[in-house]
Length: 523
Ligand code: GAP
Image (tube, rainbow, N blue to C red):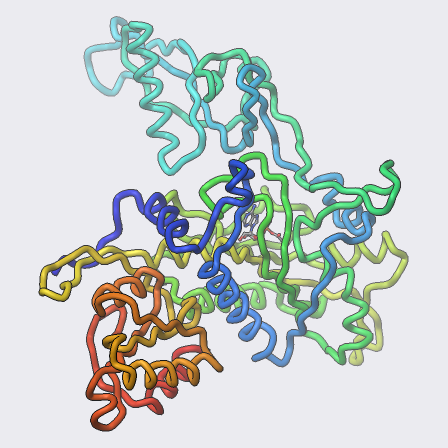
């Protein structure tokens, strides 16, 4: 039997499986789709709900120090002025005037094509620095896993096409935010391959605007929230006044956020409508924020592992001090190894007391806590773990997808696609399969078991087709177990076959043991 393997184009395989089995569709597909928007089909909606529920249970219900809220998507526009989003929630945008394509400047890379003139290179190695280096042109490439290699290849093509003699130097990639004004017109557009059409980067605000009420003037402008976090800050006083909370404590929320991303890409990784799970953990102004920050990074990492992401795919990235906002004390991203590169999955930021202070100043309503020890009021500091549900969903698909082989009814090996989801998040926990559908006693027993299981769990009943084929259908959607009601079930002790998705091992189990297994594994 072939050992489990991932296909060379894993993303293509995942996108195709998602469409085929009803996990994720393009939004408004019948009209050609809308870039950056996605719909979740029956299995995707279950998977997403399970991710949300696991997070909510672990983050809110199973802790004594965190409460949950649900704030509105459209909030008073002053919230976004105070938070700094109206002025500063921007990405640098570059236009191609010819193709009308738009690029995020920090994702559009370029390099000079530099040639060391061979004829003046000294014969002895090591003296290359004395050679004359000439810039003969520019190449560009969109950010990818291999940006430097792509640029090098384009530089080689450039040299070959223009029949330039001499030795091509190693390219030094820079992104468009680092381009000098005099370089802009020399950099080719990735769309046309020709220079002269790219604009200098300009700030593009990513918030979606709308109007509230019957008037359509500036006074009616409101925004679809670009993050859920501001809901927790705006409701801080409400929770403190009513929630009997005491420091340290957190306010958590799950909900949709909207960003007019310049370049939505990589399937559901970066979209324009997505879902966030954020928590603001308020601590004393004198508390050891670095320790608390570390504890939350560890908590998030362990939680990802608890829903089935392999530790080997996770890493950490500390934002360099010079790139942090002035109020930020530190931000660490938990990174995941997606097929298209190592990318941010979960950001954990130490934001000081910036947000509450901003809202206190803008609203005139103090955002403080009374310190019993010092008898003084102060504004708490905050640690903010913020993650996207869609990004987790993509990560579990990428980590779980494998292809191997399994014997069919006649013992012939055939290809098997498996989604190795943790039972915690699998859309279907158990499939109930009567061995054959033309034996009423078997079918009746299977239907009864199915009815009892579905009161508590998402289960699936399937009586159509050969048993091996039915197993395969469940493997492909990540169902951890199948139970088969066979003749032994009705003729002897009522036990049935439990078949494990990953090992394909089959054991006998009775109903009480099945419920105990589910109770232990699905939590
Ligand atoms: N309140 C902080 C905040 O929103 P962020 O890093 O902009 O921080 C947090 O977003 C998380 O939300 C990201 O780590 C990512 O998981 C998810 N996210 C952000 N933009 C996204 C997008 N366009 N599509 C999908 N998920 C996104």
